[in-house]
Image 1 (cartoon, rainbow, N blue to C red):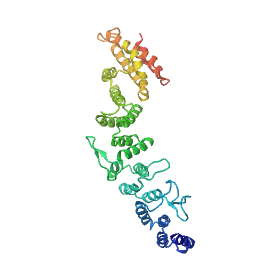
Image 2: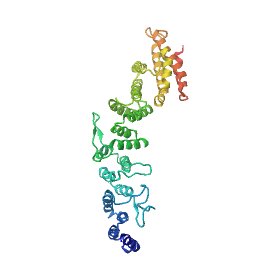
Image 3: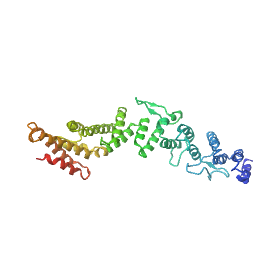
Image 4: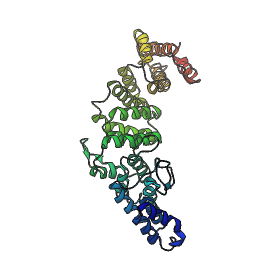
Length: 375
């Protein structure tokens, strides 16, 4: 009997019930004949009845009473060979995203409530659409602290809007963090990975960014250094190798800062480099430093050419100061000048032994800085 009624309703069609002017009448006919998906689609077409369509869909879906499209990229209504005519499938993802688009950025918490109904609905790649929608919502609204929570000064997570739902919060936050990382939003990704307590990923990203923006007179590097310093106390349980590199890069920032802070800081900068044990200043340490270089990460290797040039520049300036003519304290042949010359020889030999293709002008700059110290 139901199938017969459905067929009769389909035969009369939308024009008979004037669905454009009276969508509720035609939707009622479809509802009474069990064609819920089609009824929702009719109401969804009109702006005036769209909210009713959405909430009807949510209610019916929660009670397992509608058939969903197999992928979120299909039309609002689609047919499947597995379903008897005139039954169709509803693209719940499409209508929820379409409905929330107008207020998602201004009221992301409300949009989140609608997205939760998509928990358990997957796209072609097997991704949970609730998580996918959250990632897109955060990208557009930038309200990740409101939605996902934040960390207080002690590193404890405060609750966000997502904590109201019975889902795997860490997994969702990690997925959103991955999406931010892929878009190149490193600062956002660091914050999100920290919310998920994934400090290995936090250090991976910070190490990459610290090595790319190593010059301290660069405001971008000053900003990332501030972030890195604030995060550092909470990374104690991270991967040992990643943390060691992270601390080394922070010390290299201190070296750069001293280098750029004037002549009176040069000896202190050289002392920092000596302590870090990445550039040799004594003959007997050359081979050990070359071997250590082979185990450096790509991020750290990328910094070495600039560090070599700065070390040689420091030695060059200290040598000139130590060998000022006419000074009884700084004679050209005194022990201090000779020590600096020896250190320069070590640095040049080390640079020539590195199994690494440095930028084309690196060796030329090193030779130019070294030239005054050869005789």
